[in-house]
Length: 271
Image 1 (cartoon, helix red, strand yellow):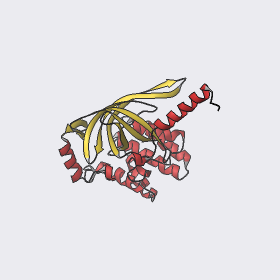
Image 2 (cartoon, helix red, strand yellow):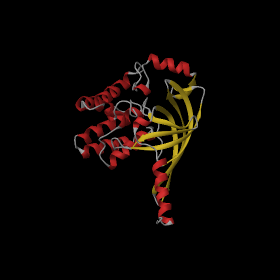
Image 3 (cartoon, one colour):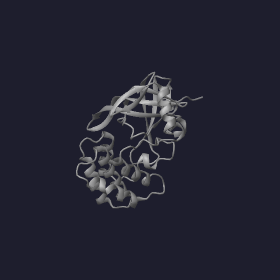
Image 4 (cartoon, helix red, strand yellow):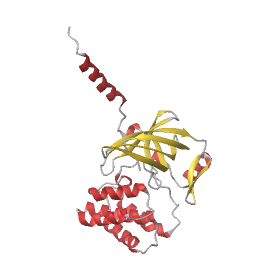
Protein backbone atom coordinates (compact mmCIF):
# COMPACT_ATOMS: atom_id res chain seq x y z
CA UNK A 1 0.00 0.00 0.00
CA UNK A 2 1.28 3.48 -0.83
CA UNK A 3 0.71 6.63 1.17
CA UNK A 4 0.78 10.25 0.03
CA UNK A 5 3.92 12.15 0.87
CA UNK A 6 3.77 14.49 3.85
CA UNK A 7 3.69 17.75 1.82
CA UNK A 8 0.82 16.51 -0.35
CA UNK A 9 -1.12 15.22 2.62
CA UNK A 10 -0.54 18.46 4.55
CA UNK A 11 -1.85 20.57 1.66
CA UNK A 12 -4.85 18.30 1.29
CA UNK A 13 -5.74 18.76 4.96
CA UNK A 14 -5.48 22.55 4.61
CA UNK A 15 -7.79 22.43 1.61
CA UNK A 16 -10.33 20.26 3.43
CA UNK A 17 -10.19 22.48 6.52
CA UNK A 18 -10.83 25.55 4.38
CA UNK A 19 -13.80 23.81 2.75
CA UNK A 20 -15.28 22.87 6.11
CA UNK A 21 -14.88 26.23 7.81
CA UNK A 22 -15.60 28.57 4.87
CA UNK A 23 -18.79 30.52 5.57
CA UNK A 24 -21.82 29.88 3.39
CA UNK A 25 -22.78 32.54 0.83
CA UNK A 26 -26.36 31.25 0.59
CA UNK A 27 -28.84 33.88 1.92
CA UNK A 28 -31.12 31.06 3.08
CA UNK A 29 -28.53 30.17 5.75
CA UNK A 30 -28.84 33.61 7.40
CA UNK A 31 -32.12 33.89 9.35
CA UNK A 32 -31.32 37.08 11.30
CA UNK A 33 -31.40 40.73 10.24
CA UNK A 34 -29.08 43.51 11.41
CA UNK A 35 -29.72 47.24 11.07
CA UNK A 36 -26.41 49.10 11.44
CA UNK A 37 -26.83 52.63 12.78
CA UNK A 38 -23.14 53.54 12.94
CA UNK A 39 -19.94 51.91 11.81
CA UNK A 40 -16.43 53.32 11.67
CA UNK A 41 -13.39 51.62 10.29
CA UNK A 42 -9.85 51.89 8.95
CA UNK A 43 -8.57 50.15 5.84
CA UNK A 44 -5.04 48.75 5.99
CA UNK A 45 -3.00 48.37 2.81
CA UNK A 46 -0.25 46.02 1.73
CA UNK A 47 1.80 47.17 -1.24
CA UNK A 48 -0.90 49.81 -1.92
CA UNK A 49 -3.58 47.12 -2.18
CA UNK A 50 -6.42 47.01 0.42
CA UNK A 51 -5.63 44.11 2.73
CA UNK A 52 -8.05 44.33 5.67
CA UNK A 53 -10.40 46.67 7.52
CA UNK A 54 -10.95 47.03 11.26
CA UNK A 55 -13.66 48.98 13.01
CA UNK A 56 -16.57 49.13 15.41
CA UNK A 57 -20.19 50.20 15.54
CA UNK A 58 -23.70 49.92 16.93
CA UNK A 59 -26.71 48.13 15.50
CA UNK A 60 -30.02 46.42 16.19
CA UNK A 61 -30.36 42.69 15.63
CA UNK A 62 -33.77 41.14 14.87
CA UNK A 63 -34.22 37.55 16.02
CA UNK A 64 -37.51 35.66 16.45
CA UNK A 65 -39.40 38.94 16.22
CA UNK A 66 -37.36 40.54 19.01
CA UNK A 67 -35.14 43.63 18.56
CA UNK A 68 -31.95 44.03 20.57
CA UNK A 69 -29.12 46.54 20.46
CA UNK A 70 -25.56 45.35 19.90
CA UNK A 71 -22.13 46.92 19.99
CA UNK A 72 -19.60 45.28 17.69
CA UNK A 73 -16.02 45.23 16.50
CA UNK A 74 -14.75 43.64 13.30
CA UNK A 75 -11.60 42.68 11.42
CA UNK A 76 -12.62 41.84 7.86
CA UNK A 77 -11.55 42.13 4.23
CA UNK A 78 -13.65 45.28 3.70
CA UNK A 79 -15.29 48.01 5.77
CA UNK A 80 -18.74 47.39 7.22
CA UNK A 81 -20.95 50.25 6.06
CA UNK A 82 -23.99 51.61 7.95
CA UNK A 83 -27.41 50.56 6.68
CA UNK A 84 -29.16 52.73 4.14
CA UNK A 85 -32.18 54.15 6.00
CA UNK A 86 -34.00 51.08 7.44
CA UNK A 87 -32.39 48.39 5.29
CA UNK A 88 -30.88 45.41 7.09
CA UNK A 89 -28.09 42.92 6.48
CA UNK A 90 -28.49 39.14 6.57
CA UNK A 91 -26.81 37.50 9.56
CA UNK A 92 -26.43 34.35 11.67
CA UNK A 93 -24.87 33.53 15.00
CA UNK A 94 -21.53 31.78 15.00
CA UNK A 95 -21.36 31.99 18.81
CA UNK A 96 -24.65 33.01 20.41
CA UNK A 97 -24.57 36.66 21.57
CA UNK A 98 -20.78 36.83 21.08
CA UNK A 99 -19.88 36.26 17.42
CA UNK A 100 -22.14 37.22 14.52
CA UNK A 101 -21.54 36.54 10.82
CA UNK A 102 -22.85 39.14 8.35
CA UNK A 103 -23.57 38.32 4.71
CA UNK A 104 -22.69 41.51 2.83
CA UNK A 105 -23.27 42.31 -0.85
CA UNK A 106 -20.43 43.02 -3.24
CA UNK A 107 -21.12 46.48 -4.68
CA UNK A 108 -22.13 46.35 -8.32
CA UNK A 109 -22.37 42.53 -8.55
CA UNK A 110 -25.88 41.14 -8.31
CA UNK A 111 -26.09 38.04 -6.12
CA UNK A 112 -22.43 38.24 -5.03
CA UNK A 113 -21.63 38.33 -1.30
CA UNK A 114 -18.77 38.30 1.16
CA UNK A 115 -18.89 37.52 4.88
CA UNK A 116 -17.65 39.43 7.90
CA UNK A 117 -17.55 38.16 11.49
CA UNK A 118 -18.44 40.64 14.24
CA UNK A 119 -17.48 40.35 17.87
CA UNK A 120 -20.67 41.43 19.65
CA UNK A 121 -22.01 42.61 22.97
CA UNK A 122 -25.80 42.23 23.17
CA UNK A 123 -27.69 44.92 25.11
CA UNK A 124 -30.88 44.85 27.18
CA UNK A 125 -32.29 47.68 25.05
CA UNK A 126 -32.81 48.57 21.41
CA UNK A 127 -31.32 51.54 19.57
CA UNK A 128 -33.29 54.18 17.67
CA UNK A 129 -32.59 57.58 16.12
CA UNK A 130 -33.90 60.52 18.12
CA UNK A 131 -33.52 63.92 16.49
CA UNK A 132 -30.46 62.84 14.54
CA UNK A 133 -28.66 61.17 17.44
CA UNK A 134 -28.57 57.57 18.61
CA UNK A 135 -30.73 56.79 21.64
CA UNK A 136 -32.05 53.64 23.34
CA UNK A 137 -35.34 52.32 24.67
CA UNK A 138 -36.77 49.02 26.03
CA UNK A 139 -37.14 46.33 23.35
CA UNK A 140 -40.89 46.11 24.06
CA UNK A 141 -41.33 49.80 23.22
CA UNK A 142 -39.32 49.46 20.02
CA UNK A 143 -41.31 46.34 19.09
CA UNK A 144 -44.56 48.31 19.56
CA UNK A 145 -43.18 50.94 17.17
CA UNK A 146 -42.39 48.16 14.68
CA UNK A 147 -45.97 46.86 14.86
CA UNK A 148 -47.42 50.36 14.46
CA UNK A 149 -45.32 51.03 11.35
CA UNK A 150 -45.44 47.50 9.89
CA UNK A 151 -41.68 47.10 10.11
CA UNK A 152 -40.48 43.50 10.41
CA UNK A 153 -37.33 42.85 8.32
CA UNK A 154 -37.14 39.16 9.28
CA UNK A 155 -40.45 38.69 7.43
CA UNK A 156 -39.71 40.94 4.46
CA UNK A 157 -41.26 44.18 5.78
CA UNK A 158 -38.19 46.29 5.18
CA UNK A 159 -39.57 49.84 5.06
CA UNK A 160 -41.64 51.25 7.95
CA UNK A 161 -44.84 52.98 6.94
CA UNK A 162 -46.02 56.45 7.91
CA UNK A 163 -42.70 57.96 9.03
CA UNK A 164 -42.02 60.49 6.26
CA UNK A 165 -43.18 63.76 7.77
CA UNK A 166 -41.18 66.20 5.65
CA UNK A 167 -42.30 66.95 2.10
CA UNK A 168 -38.65 67.56 1.21
CA UNK A 169 -37.95 63.83 1.41
CA UNK A 170 -41.08 62.69 -0.44
CA UNK A 171 -39.73 63.07 -4.02
CA UNK A 172 -36.62 61.03 -3.23
CA UNK A 173 -38.72 58.32 -1.59
CA UNK A 174 -41.12 58.21 -4.54
CA UNK A 175 -38.21 58.07 -6.99
CA UNK A 176 -36.75 55.18 -5.03
CA UNK A 177 -40.04 53.32 -5.30
CA UNK A 178 -40.06 53.93 -9.07
CA UNK A 179 -36.62 52.33 -9.33
CA UNK A 180 -37.25 49.38 -7.00
CA UNK A 181 -37.78 45.91 -8.43
CA UNK A 182 -37.81 44.52 -11.94
CA UNK A 183 -40.39 46.92 -13.43
CA UNK A 184 -38.77 50.34 -13.12
CA UNK A 185 -40.24 53.68 -14.14
CA UNK A 186 -36.95 55.42 -14.88
CA UNK A 187 -38.52 58.43 -16.59
CA UNK A 188 -40.80 59.19 -13.65
CA UNK A 189 -37.85 58.78 -11.26
CA UNK A 190 -35.71 61.14 -13.36
CA UNK A 191 -38.42 63.82 -13.31
CA UNK A 192 -38.61 63.57 -9.51
CA UNK A 193 -34.85 63.63 -8.98
CA UNK A 194 -33.79 66.46 -11.29
CA UNK A 195 -35.52 69.24 -9.27
CA UNK A 196 -33.79 67.99 -6.12
CA UNK A 197 -30.26 68.31 -7.53
CA UNK A 198 -31.06 71.60 -9.29
CA UNK A 199 -32.04 73.39 -6.08
CA UNK A 200 -29.37 75.62 -4.59
CA UNK A 201 -28.58 74.24 -1.15
CA UNK A 202 -32.15 73.61 0.00
CA UNK A 203 -31.71 69.86 0.49
CA UNK A 204 -29.72 67.92 3.05
CA UNK A 205 -26.52 66.15 1.86
CA UNK A 206 -28.03 62.65 1.98
CA UNK A 207 -30.95 63.66 -0.22
CA UNK A 208 -28.60 65.30 -2.73
CA UNK A 209 -26.08 62.47 -2.88
CA UNK A 210 -28.70 59.77 -3.41
CA UNK A 211 -30.55 61.83 -6.00
CA UNK A 212 -27.31 62.18 -7.97
CA UNK A 213 -26.42 58.49 -7.55
CA UNK A 214 -29.88 57.41 -8.73
CA UNK A 215 -29.58 59.68 -11.77
CA UNK A 216 -26.23 58.08 -12.60
CA UNK A 217 -27.74 54.63 -12.10
CA UNK A 218 -30.58 55.51 -14.50
CA UNK A 219 -28.08 56.67 -17.14
CA UNK A 220 -25.87 53.59 -16.71
CA UNK A 221 -28.85 51.29 -17.17
CA UNK A 222 -29.63 53.18 -20.37
CA UNK A 223 -25.98 52.79 -21.53
CA UNK A 224 -25.36 56.54 -21.32
CA UNK A 225 -22.00 56.18 -19.61
CA UNK A 226 -20.72 59.75 -19.93
CA UNK A 227 -23.93 61.19 -18.50
CA UNK A 228 -23.74 58.68 -15.64
CA UNK A 229 -20.15 59.65 -14.82
CA UNK A 230 -21.16 63.30 -14.58
CA UNK A 231 -23.77 62.46 -11.93
CA UNK A 232 -21.38 60.28 -9.92
CA UNK A 233 -18.82 63.07 -10.06
CA UNK A 234 -21.39 65.46 -8.64
CA UNK A 235 -22.36 62.97 -5.93
CA UNK A 236 -18.75 62.33 -4.91
CA UNK A 237 -18.22 66.03 -4.10
CA UNK A 238 -21.25 66.55 -1.85
CA UNK A 239 -20.01 67.55 1.59
CA UNK A 240 -21.65 65.91 4.58
CA UNK A 241 -22.81 62.77 2.75
CA UNK A 242 -22.31 59.41 4.45
CA UNK A 243 -19.20 57.30 3.68
CA UNK A 244 -21.38 54.51 2.29
CA UNK A 245 -23.07 56.73 -0.28
CA UNK A 246 -19.75 58.32 -1.29
CA UNK A 247 -18.21 54.87 -1.73
CA UNK A 248 -21.05 53.95 -4.07
CA UNK A 249 -20.60 57.17 -6.06
CA UNK A 250 -16.89 56.44 -6.42
CA UNK A 251 -17.68 52.89 -7.54
CA UNK A 252 -19.90 54.39 -10.26
CA UNK A 253 -16.98 56.52 -11.43
CA UNK A 254 -14.84 53.42 -11.89
CA UNK A 255 -17.37 51.21 -13.67
CA UNK A 256 -21.06 51.17 -14.67
CA UNK A 257 -23.45 50.93 -11.73
CA UNK A 258 -26.45 48.89 -12.88
CA UNK A 259 -27.31 47.11 -9.61
CA UNK A 260 -27.98 48.69 -6.21
CA UNK A 261 -28.84 46.39 -3.34
CA UNK A 262 -31.84 48.21 -1.89
CA UNK A 263 -33.31 48.63 -5.41
CA UNK A 264 -32.53 45.29 -7.00
CA UNK A 265 -32.24 42.63 -4.26
CA UNK A 266 -35.04 40.06 -4.04
CA UNK A 267 -37.40 40.66 -1.09
CA UNK A 268 -35.88 39.52 2.19
CA UNK A 269 -32.30 39.37 0.88
CA UNK A 270 -30.47 42.21 2.59
CA UNK A 271 -32.96 44.98 1.94
